[in-house]
Amino acid sequence: MSYFKNVCLLKAPQKVDIPYGLILSDITEVCYLAGMVKNDVDSITIPVNTYASNPLHDFERYLRTHPADMIGISSMTGAYSNALEYARIAKKYNLYVVLGGYHPTALPGEVLKSPYVDAVIRGEGEFTFKELVNEGSSEGVLGLSFKDNGNVIHNPDRGVIENLDVLPQPMREIRPKRFGNKGTDYLFDTVFTSRGCRIKCSFCSNDMVNKNWRYRSPLNVIEELKMIHTTKKRKILKIWDANVLTDVDRMEKIVDLMSENNLTNFKIWTESRTTDIIRAEHIMQKLHDIGLRHVSLGIESPNLETLKRIRKGTNPKTCEKAIEILNDYKIKVQGYFIIGHLNETVEDIKRYPEYAKTVGLKQAVFMVMTPYPGTPIYEEYKRANSINSYRWDMYNNFGTVIEPNNIDLKTLKKMLAYCNGKFYGIDASNRQRTISGTVLEAIYRLINVAVIEKNDDRNSLSDLKNYMYEYLHALVGGNIKNAKFRDAKLLKNLGGKVIFRFFHSKGNSVDFKFTMNGSSADLSITDSKKTDGYRCISFYLDDILNFEEHTPLKRIVALSSRYDIARANKTKKPIIFLKLALNRNFIATLYHLTIFLTKTIIRSIFQNPRR
Image (cartoon, rainbow, N blue to C red; front, top):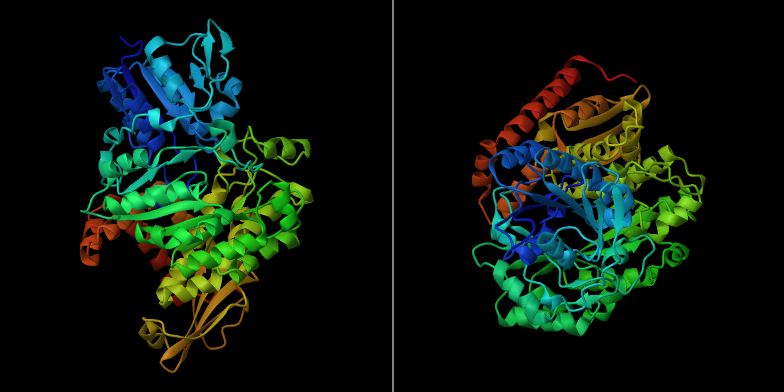
């Protein structure tokens, strides 16, 4: 008979997530916890979709109508305040609240100062959680920190799980409905075939929880893949190990077993080290054959000195070779970069987007160094007095919480916008292949800048506009000649010469200048203030910010995720748009988009843009 009988589990979402459904958690981690205790308790549930429009309300409604006596909440640093919100509601219904994950492991004492938290599970949680559920909190439960009559007790650490095959398979069937899918039917799903890492990068939290690299046997991995594979639709599978190619021979066995068992109806995305891609070149065709389509590489910096300082164990040449290999096998490659190193200057940062393009990347993610608690980087930046905020909401890889090497806060924020603008600018426009798509792409990326920066209450409205303008200004100088835009007729109907002007303030604007050139069109991006006979349509950054204000991040995530799910299921576009048209998120977004565009058109007709 277990001590706790009706258990809830949640993984708290980060306060700010980039609006892209694929990066959201598929909560596999808490499904492992559920699997550990499913035979010990009367009920085990994941009661709410934390990405719903009002999940806190949904959670409280659940607790009013269902028995529960304990909740376990997993939390990253950027999700900690959200975790406390769920804990607060749980306490209203007298639940025992235990937190686990990276942030509670790093700062168990601080977490237990909250009146809403009863215990913290440090490190890998499965066996500690099982003992807590069955026995309650006591000094015999290794890896547990808990309150006892006003005192905080930190039990000794629990060793890592050496044989990962002893863990039951994740209990995915209890996952809540999300974006139209539920349980084992999630179209996006995540598998971990190993834990830990042999490389100890100084900025990474992985070592704090998972320690040294350990692996599941190939047969154990195949057992899990059989549980989620289906021939009815092609699932997008994230194999989300810290380093999936640490043991190339083991990975080849997994790949061969996938082929033998016809487990190939996946579209696979994984992360890897550049050196591992090079070592695994001889199995790259096999990886492609079982569905590997996207690899994200931790490049971090083009600067060799920086790579040594953060103990990355790579160099620019290995990065270039890995990208070449992946391109050869037609596997999309994305590069991760981190700006804000203590040894780098603004001029060093400006090299990042140029380097990313030079080495052949089509996708890149630029992040700001985030000194997560419990990492060596946290201590290093703290000693250098370079941490300027301990507001945990902003610890999400994009919030700026540091001021390194005398680079002030606003300059570093501008550099993040600059890197995205310089890398994506004209190339993103060229990929759109339509004039309307080119303009909407720019608006979308400006909204992304706003989403990242709005979470920092140190930013004024003027600051937000300045960071957006920094993105735009990085595009200046880009040119496309003889582009075959599919909607060139639009340009012709507007007189063959049109400027789409993004207006910041008097004297500050960036123009997307389209000119008919026979049956083709030319595009130049300039900060010229002249119209020279061009019809001018002006977008005001204030209006874009207003549109973003009325279009919550969760709404964008929900829509993009439903669209991705429909595309993966090979739903015909008319059906996709019909379903979206009946979705209230789509209707609300369309309403505010219509207001935004109508205001823009009216201004363009009746007003001359200020100069």
